[in-house]
Image 1 (tube, each protein chain N blue to C red):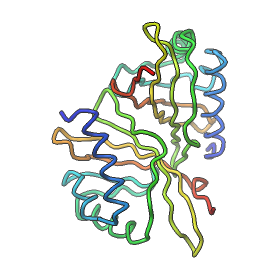
Image 2: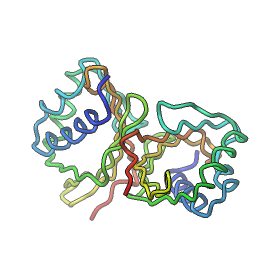
Image 3: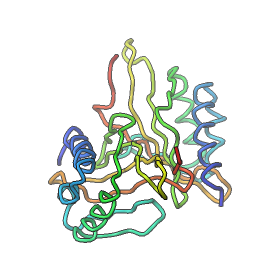
Image 4: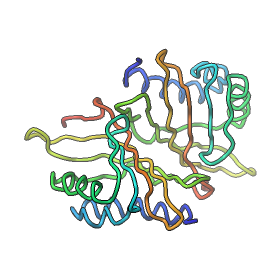
Length: 125
Length: 125
């Protein structure tokens, strides 16, 4: 099983590839049958094609992720990252406060991503 | 259903009661049949008595929680909080980096808590 250090490196690589607007690079971090629930309580998308389309869309918005604290591991197959998303919405600068929780497969790829943010975590700044 | 603002207030109340070493006050934030998995991947404890005993132990260590970013809500019944635990271990000052994810019942009480931290999130400082 991939260890915590490898999982955390993948989380930071996720941020780096996202901020480079490299949707393909982000999607490549996921297992083929992975799931994404962003936000938690919203629709779950599944599979690499749907996940690539999701990141093609989100990276096209010019969003930038700012890491707020070092990634956290676990005593299982999960890790968490807390960050803010800086993006323009409705022509105005905005910030969305998010915590992602990811689980990982034995090969170190992301099996699931759940993004914790609610309507009141979107702030116009 | 309790809203995100109420859930976030409960997370901050959790920190406040924990830092006051008020195990009873922390446990009172939980539903009677709640579960605690701390750390994620470790043993799950269930029920108010077990949870009270857990916080009696952890608050007795003189630990102090430092919030690292505003709590995050969700579009469901969950919220997340990222913090550091300052505590003495083996006679030395230490810090444990943690993200808690909690789910809440309709009455606003915590139904489940999962604490994301791994062996390498414990730092002697």
